[in-house]
Image (cartoon, rainbow, N blue to C red; front, top):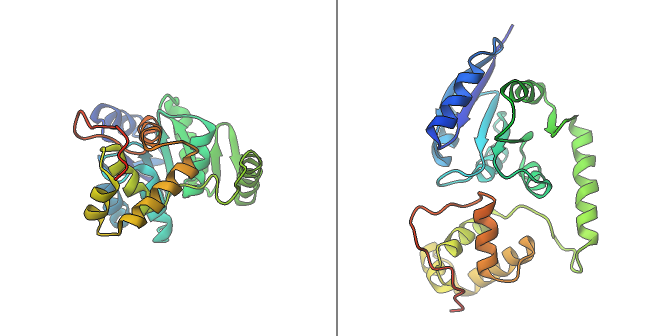
Length: 236
C-alpha cells in the first residue's frame, strides 16, 4: 500500500512536533518534511512534492493562505489542509477560495485529522463533517458566496481573498506605515497604494485602516514581529 506523504508547517515547535508524533502512529501516512515559516514551506513543497501539506494559517513571512495560492498558481499537485485557531465560516470561505482542500481547527482530534488527510489525498474536500467532491465544493462555495453578495449594496467582488499585493499592503498597514511609506517600500505609486487600501477595506467590509489591521491580526493573516506598532490611522 502506498503511503500518503505529508509535510507539516507550523512555527510553534511543540504543536509542530505534536502533529508529527501523532501522524507517525498512522501506518498509511509518512511525514517527509517540516517547516516553520511560509517561504521555507513553499520551497519544501516544491522540492518534496508531498501528497498533502498541513499548513498553519498564521505563519511568519507568507501566511498559509498565501502559500496555498502560490501552490495553486504553480500547479503543484500537493493538496493543502489549512490548520488554524480561527475557526469560522468566513475563514473557511477564504481558505477554500484560496485553493485549500480542507480547513481544520487546531483542536481537532488526531484520529480525525488523519481521516481528513486521507479524504484529501483521495481528491475530496473536507469542511467540518462534510466530505465533498469537486462538483459539490463548487456548489457549496457558490451558494454561500451568493448569500453574502445579496447582503452587499455594491456586489463587485465582496468576498474574495486578498491578492498577493493587497496582502503585502495590509501587512504594512498593520505595522502602522503611511501610504507614502508603503509606496516607497514597494516601489509603487502613492495612488496605487491608496487604491489597494480602498479595495482592502471594501473586501474586508471594514471602515478604516485600524479595523483592517485588527481584522487581519485576529484571523492570523498577518503577524507582528516587533512590538508597539502604531495603529493610528495615517492619511498621508
